[in-house]
Image (cartoon, rainbow, N blue to C red; front, top):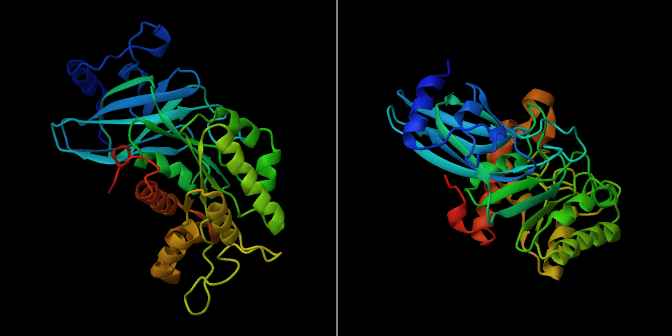
Length: 346
């Protein structure tokens, strides 16, 4: 059973100097613990980007994780010894719709959920973010903020790897191809105006380009790259995660696994070619996930995807999405796309 004593923890929060005032009071002081229950917190704030500072710990040993909005992982499970306190901060994007751009609006404001085996929240402060760098995600169902278990996109798990000062604005949407992402008004036409100079825009679109010819696919990628640069942003092309489709020899060397469509278009190869021609950073997630899935083998890789739950070899579990988000995090650091000091490791 989870251990959480809000009354005791509220007293600790006030003693620590964290202010607890309802957001709607408009006193100029940040909202705090009176916006929380044993399950989570709700803050009545308008769309925007917010810094969240939490104080974790209680009388007993605690293990606390925090998620928010549409099941986004914002803080990994953090252990705090009995009687100790630990301060952690992260930045979160609040928008409408709060999940997939073509999905329901969700709940207004900022919603945070407490998780972990023994959560203990001793204090919380929410303030408008200053000088935040955004990472926009343009993608499909393997990237998006999935609305329900057991599904999760890797973009949904990426925020937990980032510290205060970087937020993830996940505009990936289920079922989208390069064609539909550019044509649907709630997608690219909505995302592009939000891009500010210096923002990163990670693009992973391929899984649904099943009938897109190579010339069109290449042109669509080039359009997205040019659109990001037009706003002063920094495009990053990401090859798609592999499908879990093994050959008899235990490899994934086939068109289904490696995203070659029915017209013979090798999506990862085209993405690599466009990245080289346009001098765009490339995260070769196809190569990285291929290596990982093959190393796990037929049985071990089932937990990465939803094979056990849904016989699904394309979409990832929460565990798999977290692992794949870690691969993206590693590349963001290795290619110096995000300063190492703004990234959580381990």
